[in-house]
Image (cartoon, rainbow, N blue to C red; front, top):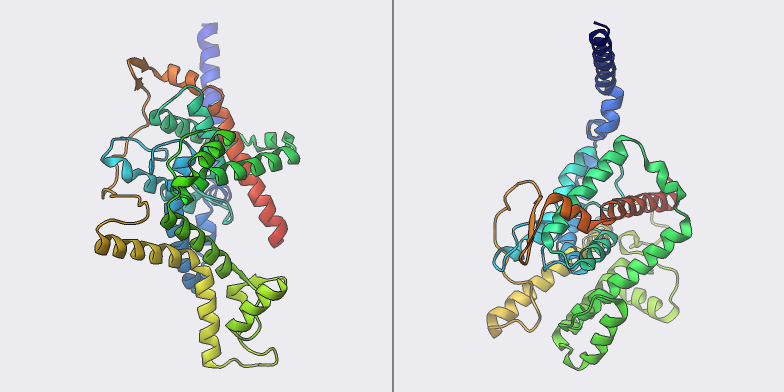
Length: 378
């Protein structure tokens, strides 16, 4: 009787605790905190539509080649970044999905507009290091992504973000700087149009210098021109004419400002004319949408060259199959050669990557947020 009474009391106590937690979670204040879209959407102003539309299209067209590049950095097949069903036919389309799936979730639950959503450089590097240690395949990358998401969700639920305060600033800066060098190294061979192997920093540069004579001129020219144009459209010093702008920039290298902020009228002009307003808006649009302009122009140029020459002089991504992949759970079992990995075996093979990837990804997000807070005075 005493045992049944204790069990009943424990059950009643647990039920009351769960009821209080559920009731507390359903409060309007907490609901608005957990789902930020309920806070900012009612206060959204129509004046933001044009800017957000340009920004959305710009970012959308930017993350497509970016996600493909991150797949390469992660050591995964081209356009295959944390997604499944790999084969020689379907491989071309999967990198696109990693660039937009997270955006839909972040639109609802995101609370900070200046943090990266989706694949990042550091996550790609950590994924490559985790997979290459045991020569693991894409199925392990998918599971690693799933486990990382679960760990991040658990850390957020338990409010364990304070653990990152114990990671010193020099460690974070050093890791980020090293990551930028590794990423730049991984992209040099693609700009030169070289097909070289190697996973280590020194090994990659050694292979690049050994095959430097195989550099593809069209690929190199196109890559360098795109970089220069993007930088020129991003930063300039301007006075009253484009000729004077270029002259001053090249001659004196004065401190510069963004193209979208360039003054196109004398400073004593109180009321700008219609033409001046159009020029100002044009500068703003060109500067903001520079990534769109480059992507579209290069795509059209390559299409025309391939159409008239029969073969593109630059290396193209290739055919991308239409449609969405099947929505399903990540693989909890994998076949590597003649060996079958169970879920426990896969977790053991990924080892510390299941914790390192989400921890450092969270550290990256917080570091970026702090930098923007400091620069923009939030």
